[in-house]
Image (cartoon, rainbow, N blue to C red; front, side, top):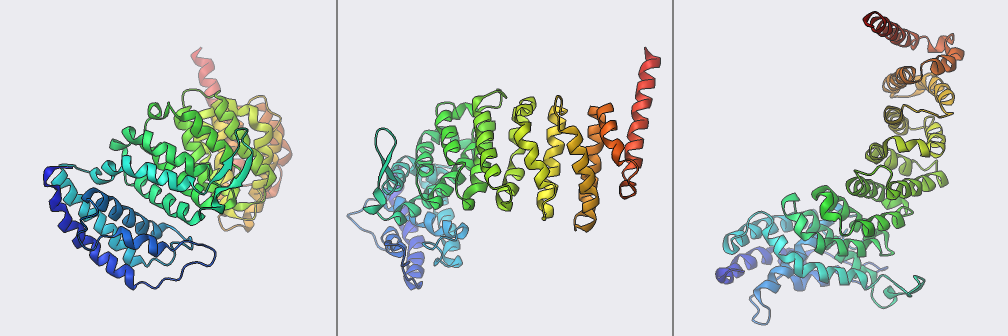
Length: 427
């Protein structure tokens, strides 16, 4: 900090005191299921008077940690944070913003200067607090005891939210040099047994991966990818996060290698979970929403996974909810474009399922969008499979309930004939 940093005490106290006052007036009853009083943790972090026993840097760190937790309550439904009123969280946001400006003036920093400068001090503290209540393991990896028997997990939950807040305050321009600080803490969160703590680690990795280049993760990519694989079996409440995180990490770090073992391992782990619960709407919707970049990264190698992917697609095409149906049709279209579905026995089955879905769509709210996607896929199949498609579609050609499809396919057929004639005359 600069020599003039002592002048920061005044704005620090001016911003901290109203928050501390509001916090003291906020009703709070500690959760019966937790031995942690979050209010008691917060109050000492907010300076209200100059304390000769606490230096300025410590006061700034504590103030920022308090605001980080208060602000984090806006995106949490956890019982430890649900008591924090919106106005107090919003006040914490404003206070950090205002103090960051003051800090930039005195410390000659810009942008995320305050958070960036605190990271080397804060990250190890939060990492250790998260680790305190994790599962102790033997050298062989066997779980032997829960450290949480000695340290309440609530402390780790608080630290995880504070960690996620710090990470998500930093933008692309600063993150490369901070990866070595943030990644170990995020991995510690993913290794915790609590879904709540895992979730904050996943959100952090999503932000990290979006903010850095693949080269900046090269030193730790195997550890992160292994953590992704280990967490794919996570509970329903954080499944969407582990899918988004895993897809982002593997496509970022393995983008130049479609045959990477990590692509194969992560995709197979996800498919195993989906096969166990194919009727779980939340899981299938999350996977279908986030998986496309992985498909694009794998490309033609997707052919090796058809025997597992298409049976799931065929089930989901007839799901009760329109969201699943629309998402699965979009992914089928993507898979066909990427692979031209060569050397596969699924063409005839796919044509049959699409024909059935086109008729079922009459009873769905999104009938027009579903039917448009079905027709697009049929045209794409016709384009890439030719005579094989003609043979598969033959059984449906005279179905009166599919009469609206015929003009689109006929137009496509005429276009193909014209192209072939032009090519022949050109030669």
